[in-house]
Picture 1 (tube, helix red, strand yellow):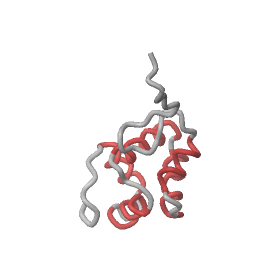
Picture 2: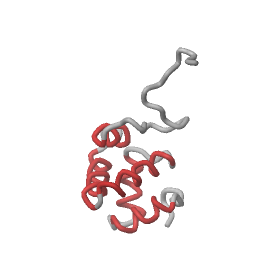
Picture 3: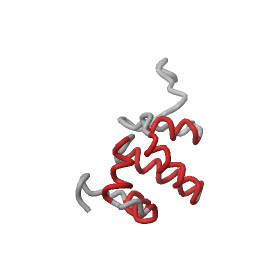
Picture 4: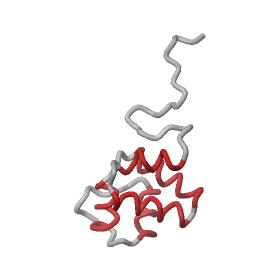
Length: 99
């Protein structure tokens, strides 16, 4: 029986991306208007659309958004997309500023 609080787009507590979000909506929720982050997520999706969705979900689980996506990609992983994806998918990102 419903308690009146049905959420048509469930997300785990603290996450931004829901199971019913389109890819476009997922990207918009993750980037906080940051052009660098948008570029990184689009590169990830272009490389492998299905795996890219999981990488975005993992970033959401790690609560890495907006400029932090760009900073990890650019500053920590030297714009090496494969290394960035590999570490995100392992869900073991170091603190920003370390590698």
